[in-house]
Amino acid sequence: MLEPEIADVAEAAAAEHYLAAGIAPAAARLYRSLYLDPCPPSLQVPAVSEIERRIAIRPEPAGPGAAAEPAWLRSLPQRPTVYVTLGMVWNQDLSFFRIVLDSLARRPVNVIAALGPGKEPADLGPQPPNVRVCGFIPHAQLLGHCDLVICHGGAGSVLDSLSAGLPLLIAPQAADHFYNASRVAAAGAGRCLRHADLTPASVSHEIDVLLQDALYRDAAASIAAEIAAMPSAADALPTLTALADQGKAVR
Image (cartoon, rainbow, N blue to C red; front, side, top):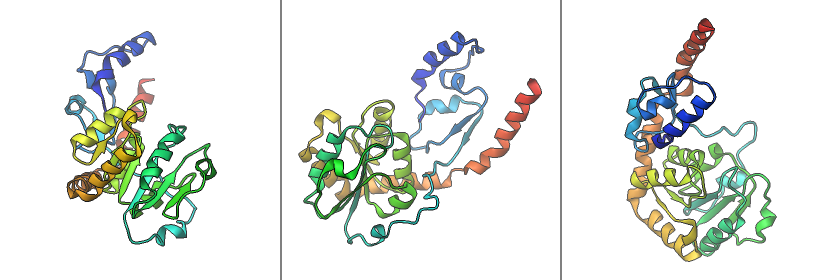
């Protein structure tokens, strides 16, 4: 997701490293040659219109590779399924998982918590029968079985979830998480809970709202339709090839 406020900083860094300085509007200065935009229209900011050469490109979750879909995913009880993740980088805070799982442990829902690299299910100790803790599971396998995602607000987690039409509860950690959470909330596809306000009671309240109010799922489904209508990565290939050939000709 594009935040034009960083343009001035990027421009200064470019000048410091002897790159050509630009005089175009803020957003356009960042992407003079080409901007591949994976952000659906409902989440994107108006400044993107400043970019002369922009190609929308559909965000897609990483495929499952050779691994078969786990059998337990297909045999989950018929009730809402909540997926909990801190992604692949910001997953060091086990207190986040403990608070969220505590809020979900006694609810009539299935819970899937993916801890990510460097963490093991045993790190969280024993869990009740409705909670399954795993190290990693590809979104392409998982999200079609889910009804709600609780995450940190990383772009990958957000876009993958919305591609599947899933509303989000976002507890931002750092980096672009706060900005992404604000865009999702503004689009009506999720809610944001500050880390300082993260308690089992507050998480439980937010889950109730998101699962019971169909407007959040409707907004997420609308964004999923936007994403499905975006061009695929293959559609951008001719432009990228032409740009590469142009660069070779200049050299």
